[in-house]
Image (cartoon, helix red, strand yellow):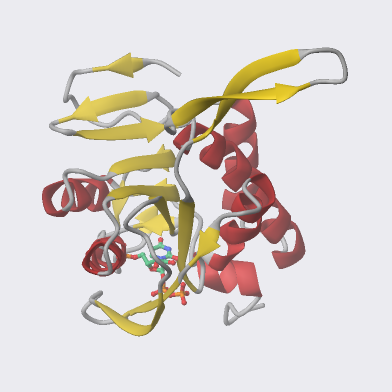
Length: 230
Ligand code: PRP
Ligand code: URA
């Protein structure tokens, strides 16, 4: 992972950029690229799509958590004392329903004591505006909160989710997505300049239907096998 401070155009495949006050990390690990390409493949069936999502989320979360605050702790090994680092703060993860559910297991397996909240958001097919149909959020004030949504397209859903978690008390928040559009990243940076974004790719653009291109299609439909021609 490399870091640069220039604010030039997005180049998919390039690593960490710090634009304005927000950090955008495009994870360029070869395994992330390999898994993402398989997710993009229209011939990938739902069963494989689910396991690819989980494995790619593991890579993304390792990146998104690499600078979590820690504190020193000492334990006794069978031989002598050993001092190391333990996580300092609780963690909260909030998948955005539906598609964010595909990313949840990876986080819970890496951090079994994580608190889990849920936000249900649906994007209107004509206006692309999200509407919230469900919210159940834990205590977040003392924690680092990770919002999960595989697709950051217009940014409407992510911004609405970030509004909700902040209103519920979240103070340190990070957004983890699989594929992002430049439009969505810019919108999030305007609305939530304090939120760092970790993604596997910033793709070329949005098409006229606000789908990410090249993208991978409708993530929720592919994850749950509900696409019309399945
Ligand atoms: C998809 C996706 C995001 C949203 C992204 O959800 O999972 O939540 O669209 O688009 P945006 O950045 O333009 O808001 P969708 O509304 O299709 O619901 P689903 O997850 O239930 O399929
Ligand atoms: N939601 C998706 O699932 N895919 C897109 O490309 C855009 C929004």
